[in-house]
Image (spheres, rainbow, N blue to C red):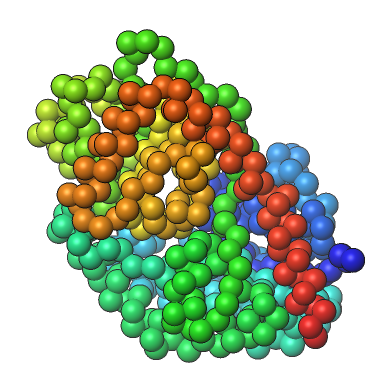
Length: 425
């Protein structure tokens, strides 16, 4: 019999007004609060957005939620321009050190709150990366950790697609990851504590394998993200003679690997009438546009840039197929947005996509070499372009598949973990 518990949630990234990891944190604490009393420790720079949204009622139900903010210090990370430059460069270890310092302050606050509230367990939610679990494993209550990500490497043979800066960054990240998995004591202690009560949550199957490989611990898979709150609930049919409309969305960074799609489409040019919409923006936008011109396909691509989320969903809903090319991701909000828009998805059989996309909602290609990926990607696009009944079958499957990732189902899954954790005390 499930009982309501007093949960201490650690969610550094938690904001109702943002997407990405901040949206992940917010979705999780709301889901948990649908069944339990939840005290949330989060970063101070989220306070204004949280209080504004909760006061207006725009944040959804916050009935069982209390928020606590770690007192801000000058060296704490916040999303300023300077910090963003550090975050997206080889200087990112500086950001990691700042986050680790925040975790130490959060642990002290957690101890004071626990003395007053007497929590049943502590759940570390965001950041989802494995590197810095803080010191919450020292608390005298069960630790639930996850969904966890960040353990997988970027395939080495794909670094050449990312340009000199991208190859340096992601190659360095691979080495950095390896050293941290070997040497960091914090993850080893946190995995040991959480695994005692079966409370390790992996974001993807690949992450589960890495946890077993490096730490010898079992984990349960729960996708880290939930469905978008903006959904069309229908899919766009493709009429006879109509160009095949594709959509790609994401930050324009090397790891998102849009050149794979551009080169695949160049192969199809002259054999297939297609159009591509590329959503998002970033440091690679200019070089990707130059690549499209060099391939002779620029006139078939539109680049709306960054647009409000509602407009992005509208543009996605006009497409016939969503394509994902990312080589370094967990599950990606874009994937669930595509499914919610009734779009068949063509994506790598890797990262979190491997767990989400099934033969009933999309096509997956293996990630072995750039040449193979480009060929398989072109073949998948051509296959669906030639078989509209199959494309519509996958579109209907996408609308069914999105239901499997509701926050209600996540709340039920994590509740099982909670109940088991407290019963093993």
